[in-house]
Length: 325
Image: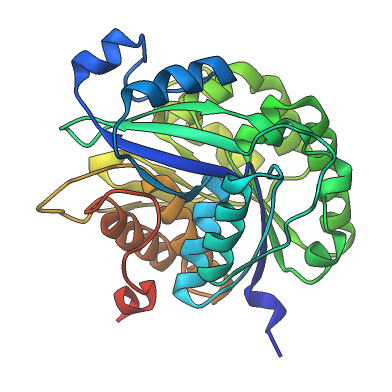
């Protein structure tokens, strides 16, 4: 029988990633801001795909990536998200279940296509994402499998969901259910521009429900409209546990009012930073669920992030159990 302490329900956009290696010039030609995540419509998807030849296609999505990473460590992962009734939806379901994450594909009457994220990776390993939400805009309270939350000791919420009005309502329903059943609530801020769009919503959710926070430096600074030191001081007041990733400078982890710096892991061949934050979160959560110290949680997260940036894509190429040794 699964130990409920190891069960996490991940909630986010069910997206198929379309990865392509390109140049800064190509980004400029398509008016893509380097390092950002922008939302695009179906017409723009077609425009991108006309110019991209032989891309790598795999199921993705921020919370889904973290779920796969957590499963690779040996944790029990469930994923809740909305796909369309199309070949991309079938691909997403097939990929994520094959990765050891339980995902139940719910049929929908909508004709919306499965969400896609076109990830353009430049030679410096930076990724720029253009995301078509598609069927994800239909994520609502009916998309939620309450049984999975009741079987979990943690839920993990992807901040990108706040781009959909009905999804925000569903998130609050999930949080109320989780809180009533002593289930810890984790939130990933997802992207600086996402925080810019939903700063007040994030602050409200954090104040009412969030126990664990994941953010990078630009996201936390955007949330509190402050420098890193001031933002860290604020988040320590609001959230019990969390991690702030700092790229090549490592990360800061905290529990209660105690914070610690985690040294970065040197990577000799940096290929693609896609999913680094997602996989960091998977390692951190695995440590947390297995009663590791907060510093150990940060170390495991760093190891997972270091593995993912050595190859293209946001899914591990090895069993992450190996990096625990």
